[in-house]
Length: 187
Ligand SMILES: [Zn+2]
Image (tube, rainbow, N blue to C red; front, side):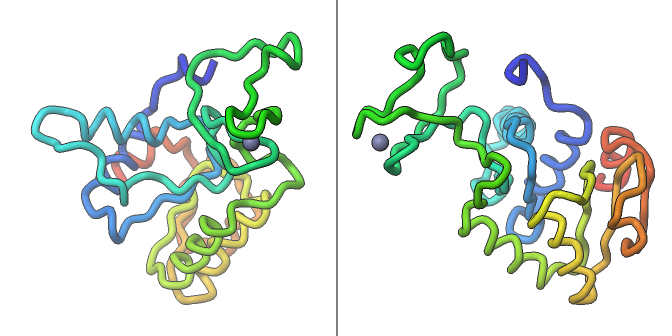
């Protein structure tokens, strides 16, 4: 189902924005659907664009739905075709140690990748502006990040159709869908 989806106007606006200055415009996402990457590749693989800069890639706080990793060792790969979940035997297994593989996403109750999480807090502490787009602002620890920005004197801009616990602490709230707001805001 996710593979058949396409990036929307918000993904494409963010891809243009981060690609224009990837060292200073950093995207952290709770999404696991890979649509930010696909929007980046559609933009940067156009003729004369030279490919997506690695620094422009989103840092995925909650992992990658198309990633598969070993449940025991460090083996990891990407798997774009549908899997057969009918038996344990038909599910992918690790080629290194033989253990059952699992989706490379963070399930509820699991820890986030400490490297990505640490870099999120570093960026939040030095950010002058933080856009918070399309999130309930309830899932921790990601929901702490805009509060770190605000505490350090940065401006928080919230884009969400409905109010969230973050709205009262935001410098600006834009109560609309991301696809209708972000192209105008970022371009
Ligand atoms: Zn393994």
